[in-house]
Length: 354
Image (cartoon, rainbow, N blue to C red; front, side, top):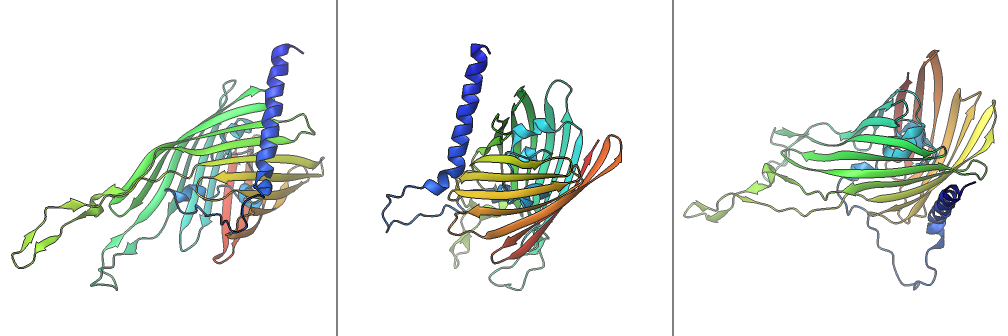
């Protein structure tokens, strides 16, 4: 083995070691902190919080512990580097009835390029029904309707740099709208995946939502104020100023291990360490069991372990593969998440490979 190859393998081994430390780091918080010290949650301190809503029934079913084992169009969200593992053209469509009549949807298209990596295009959106305006004087509604929505549209490219090591990136435009006011900006995701020589354990690393700060702007922020009601004079039109907020920057490192793998069954164990800018560190763990040469699978997971204000209690799901003919396959997926106060959310997906 030549010197350059040894150097590359040493770097990858170091990356694996760092990944292992990151996964377990939430368990090893500084024990010397004062017992009276209180950790302040950063939840709700960033813009575009919809970017934290998980994508993919498979990922949701294993409690979001998917960074090291994602292998379909949802890699554009979870780990852009893993998109290099998609060897067929693929269309992924997904729908979820989120909380409070919110709807979350994802559409992804993957186009492998012979000898030149993999290209993907994706859109995720959070939408809701129109609402009626209310004012101080008309608290039952004015009859005027308005809407609100958020979306992120991105382009992803991934490539294998070595047989077992791939890297990829996503550039995306993030937009939020409420009535006539909106905010928008560009962000970048980066991901890598590496199959280690240690019993085929896979390592995935994801950096997400590095980009512009967002602030709301639009004509809804205009207002006129009365200076002297008796004289009837008014101030000229003025505008409220809104602060800029960071996007929810996130580092996620995951490991996946096929504990059982044969023609009859495959059992994969997964664990991810998550370090977000808008919350405390946490761990996701999950398991997936597939049967009869990947004909169908079931999943279970525990997201957000170690969070003091943990809201999602558990997740479960499954999928079924159906080969229409040679070269054309369908995958139908379902997943659910249980929220501590808001109940269960359901997610459905359809994946077409051709």
